[in-house]
Length: 260
Image (cartoon, rainbow, N blue to C red; front, top):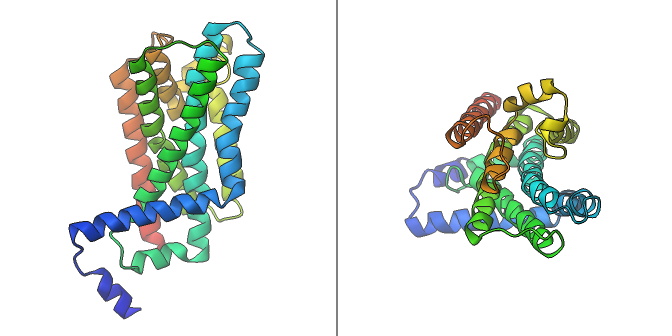
């Protein structure tokens, strides 16, 4: 163990650092692909729900298809962060893999960055599937810049949910983590107006919606297609997401350091 710890303190060359990050990300992606309980629902549920509620039940309504395309894109990016970190970190922490990676000769941060890259990649795949369905089946027509901006929001929007998932994974055990994530995941989606516009829900839900990161991400996505609400602005939504992400990462880091 001392030999491993000592080797981990040796400086890495730039090429070795890059190779370590790429290898860790590659193996993390393979790990989740070989975990059907994570990969299958994460990749299939958002397109399936969008097909049912956004396209079939709103056939011919292009505005509804466009609105739900934006909000279901947000719904889709929530799962990789929450489940990938919330459940994945809890399982690896309980089995001792997290402690092993801490003493392994790898750059600090490679573990978390690999999981973030995995979550962002899954978010990109989900967004691409939703975009293809929206264009081919829902009659959604957007400018190229709008498609690309929505894709960027999906890729970077996964970070707040990675941070929240890390808080869960740093505190919950492997058995409780899936239940806790589901308890947060689905209610937050509903309370943020991802399935039904907040204007159609009781007013109190609109008043508390700014508490949820999914609401701010949805407002950014809806703003791109011109359907965002008049409350708040783009800088305000971005600031809220950055503050939430930073706070969650700080809480999780303190918890993991205390456990160590």
